[in-house]
Structures are given as structure tokens and as C-alpha cells.
Length: 392
Image (tube, rainbow, N blue to C red; front, side):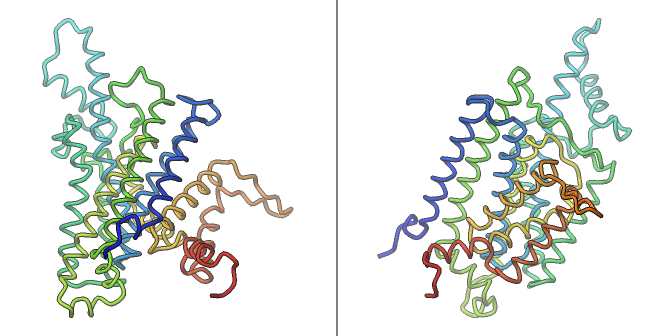
């Protein structure tokens, strides 16, 4: 008799319980609805961390379960942020322009309004014309669809070209990194219509909610991020626990044998690659309104490398391991680079963590790779299966 989804995935209930308790505790401590013991800035940090956990889980599925070391999944994350950011900038700028033109002797024409909005948005790169890429920026629904469809379409096309050519291993990783670098360089150009190096800013100001405090908006985004992470975890747990999960793990372990058994390996890999890219786009769409700004540096290859490091530290092949790694590194990064960590005076040299954090992260990755190849999640598995710590 086939076991139920919950019986095959007991960690799902434990994770959802922990996430629910965490969300309730943060809400109680928040400034908007709670005791005011948690600052809005730290609440945003926690909300962004949940989004990073979601993209880390997607990365774990494509790498830890399917064996595809993608060094481009953070590009999908950034594309989702740009898609929602375009609507946020357009709608907010439109409100400012209409307010300023309301006192004009004659009502402005639609062309004048559009020209004024274009000048406000693109004046920083010496332009006032709306590029074609902004054609649907005035529609929230269409831009939300773009959050999912654009990363999904890009992943579908790229994956189809790569997988049908049977590119695997390090060569596939290099291709995904090249794709990310190409996107990053494209977004850096001023004539792409995305404001070049300036990026999109002021994303924390939600149009139509000017009277709502940032504390309340931040709490809403935190709730949305927690909900997205919970749903994403359940979705991926369901995908990797059934027949699909068995096939993609087999592809990871021995792709040639799976192909010999008659499975369409390229189709499975393409499906996983595309679905995880779409989820990464959703995570980015929730992340950047909390960050307030997005620029092409967010799509640079190094960001996707960091993502792989998070998953490796947490333990790839374990959904909760990816969450542990992403949450740990994200919060530690905020602590070390935000000035909270005290400097260490060695007498002849003062260690400033804002300068040495990346070195510490690199050493941690090397140590985990050498001594704990299964990551923090592997250590947790060992403790749960053998609490007394002895050999079994």
C-alpha cells in the first residue's frame, strides 16, 4: 500500500509548524501589530531572509536532487525583482506626476503625462522615452505574470538548447554562468531601458498605500514571504517524494543508465530547471520591495555562486538543509556587514568584519566541503537517527 505524502515527508509538517510559530512570534514582536520590540529594519531583514530561503530550496532541487549545478538561478531571482519593480516605479511616478500637473491651467493630455513619467524615470540615463520593455509596466497583473513567465520562458529556452545538446557537468555550469554574465552586462547598459547601473529604486513605497506605515507594509511582506516559503516547500517536497523525485535522483546519480531504461532525461531536467526558475522569480518579486532597490549587480554571476555556497553549507539534497544554509549565511552576513559585530583588536592589526566577512564565508565553505560534505543538514540527520552519537 502506497504511503501518503505526509508519511513520506514527515519533515514537511515539522517545517510548517516551525515556520508558523516563527511567523507568530515575529508578528507579536513587531512594531505594527505587536509589542514593538523588533525594529522595522530587522523585520525587513527577516522577510528578505525568507525569500532567500525560497530560492535556496529551488536551487537545492535543481542541484541537490537533479544534479544540475546551475550558476544562473539568482539571475531568475533578479528578473522577478525587475518585473515587479517596473510596475512599482511606474505607478509611484505616475502618482507624483499627476499630483504635480493637477495645478496646471489646462488639464494635461495623456501624451504629456506619459512624457513626464518617462522623464522622471529615465532622466537619470538621459532619456525620456519609454522603451518597449516597459510596454506593460502600467498593469500590475501583467507584470506579476511576467514575474513567473519571463524567468520560466528564459529557463525553458536555455534549458532546451543545453539539455538537447546533452551538455552536462562543469560545462553546463559554465554555460549557466555565461548566461548570467550576459544578462548582467546587458542590464548594465543605459539603453536597455532598465536605468543601467542605477537600477530601480524606491521600491519600498507601494503605490496606493502612502498612508500606511512602513512597519505595517513590512509586516505584510513578511507574511507574504513566509506563505510563499511554506507553499514552495510543500510543492518541492511533493515533487521530489514521488516518481518524479526518484527519476531525477537517478539522473543525478547515473544519467546514462536512466536514459538506457527509456526515460526522456532531457524532459525531466527541463521541467525541473524551468519550475525552479519560476519559483526563483517569485522569491525575487517578494525580496526587492523589501530591499527597496535592485540593480544589475544583483544578477552578477557571483550572486549565483553565493547561492550554491548556501546550499552546500546547509546540505544539498535536503530541502530543510538549503533553508538552514540560506538563513544562517544571510543573518550572519547582516550581522557582520551591518556593523553589529565588534571589531577584534590584535594589537598590530584590527580585524574589521565588514572587510573580512567574505573571507570567513569562504573558509566556512572550504571547511564544510572537507569535513562535513553533507553540510549542516547531514549533521542534523546523524543526530536524529543516532541521538547517542555512537556508531550505528
